[in-house]
Image (cartoon, rainbow, N blue to C red; front, side, top):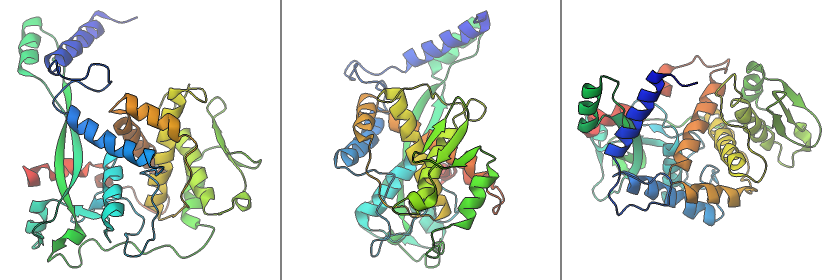
Length: 344
């Protein structure tokens, strides 16, 4: 049962949302539409849809091409902080499109502050930062009614440049050494064991059972490309993070439904982010769910933002168990938030 306070808070949030509603020209039938940042949500979503329609998954990249960057998560070239959520997809896409040899990025002012510069004529790549604010009308209403003011979410865009687009920054952000060629990756095995998950090896199917809370994957020799064992293991462990006792995501969807497709999207990106963090390069996967994913992102222009955010949280949750690396709080701080002062 909802209390009076809860009803007031809900009403405040509803009024705040109304105060920031979009002009009448906004498309009413599309979820996620409704304010000045709609174009930014749409812009990012259109990029993802175009890649999916072309049969390419923006979170599974054909790494290792001549001149291309090594597999890792994109990061700030000065602070080393990792980007997260949908920004990973945007920056990975730019690396692939332009063949950049680095996963390091920075703002125009950061390049100057570090003693370098962005070359004339270079075009930056957009990243986004989510924040909240309270409209003045909502502040006035809350003061009259004596309850808490509601907040409205908004997106802000930032422009960053790859280190390859800059001069005078030699030695910045050295790429991590690639893993030696091997099928068994000890630090991946150690991470899987450290999670404490009920992780079963056997059979010919990979799955996570939400009701019994266990993961099962086939034995590694059963995989045509054995390195894909780890991608599959991390896919299922990403599902495992969604259990009610952990990150508590909706896992009630049935195969073929939208809720099921949304959770599969989270697990696919979560596995990609984990592999990138650990330097594991799986082979490119054909997307069995590409049609249902297209349906989800076409219907809701915020779906890819939510899924990428949840995937980052799933990856961070699992990486926190990593026994060979001490957790670093700075790694979990949004780099866009850290860069705000530099681009203001």
